[in-house]
Length: 332
Image (cartoon, rainbow, N blue to C red; front, side, top):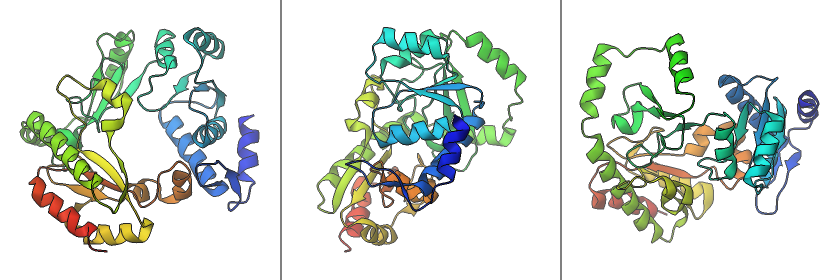
């Protein structure tokens, strides 16, 4: 079946419409093909084989449709009703015996608990949220973190970490597996530097939480702003907050006027530009263009415009930072 689906899609004209919905622009076959190849690479990169099975639990809509087509082009896949009760999920997952269960990020769907019960480990990357803000390890078996970003605050050292949940039922298997993997070791110089630049991480994270929230509030008052994306209004993020945690240093926004205004704003904004995050200095980038350049129509079909501006808020004086943003916003 997976070969049939992939062959049917590959034989379609790139310019033809593949998926439509009432609330989003149509998805072209060109973008669907790109999405299929991207998903196949991600699955293969995580050790998922063509012979394995996947269960998909996503809300109905274009993202569910494209995800099903992409995954089923690589492996056997079964979409499950996101409104199923716990006992129904348990029945179907036992019957399917999937290697992977695919859900939304930070999903609170009952299928997550059922997957744990049925020995399907949960792996989380908490880099953007930071473990000082969100408590991922209580809900995951393994937590990955990029030490290049928020932890170092400098963005100029390549390092990462993983934390094994000692309460995980797979803890022994994880430890045994790590002993068999040739994990790269940081040089002595990198270790010394990483320790030095991370000494202030606790204070820095909470200062950047406040600075990002303040910039969000100021942007909300400006007439040129169409939409702001920030985790303050995300129920799943709020459910994971630590007792004194905040919402991190990252936000994105869309301008009224589309791409042309976004270009002018970006070029006139007097802050550092770049794709990283968590640095002590503010970084701005057109992230959708960088991450989805070959599939912009696909991203647009899910309400993510190509001209979205992403901001990693640093430790500059908040009034001075706002002056830079307001001058660029008023430069139309």
